Image (cartoon, rainbow, N blue to C red; front, side, top):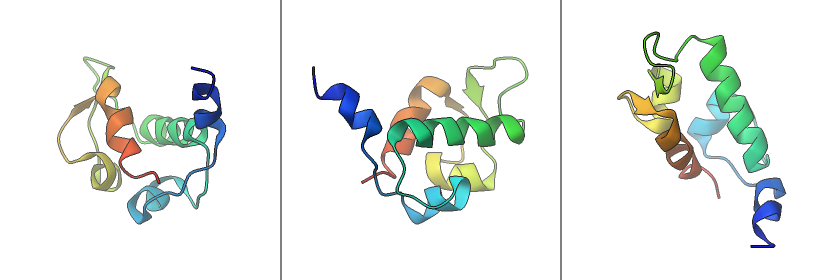
Length: 83
C-alpha cells in the first residue's frame, strides 16, 4: 500500500488524444484527473439530470468513447491513455 500514493504523483506520458484535450504531458495522474474535470465543467458535459453522468463531446469522446459514461468509469477510460 505504501507505493500507491507515489503512483498518483509520478508523471506519466499522455496519448495524443488526451494531450489534445488537456495539454502536453507528462503530468501526474492527479493533474490529468483535475484537467479532465476542468474540461468537462468548462464545456458543460455533465448530464443536467444526473451529474454523475458525462456526455462527451468530440474531443472528450476521442479519449473516453462517444457514449454517455458514469464519472466512476471515466477514470478507468482515461487511464488507458496514460503510460
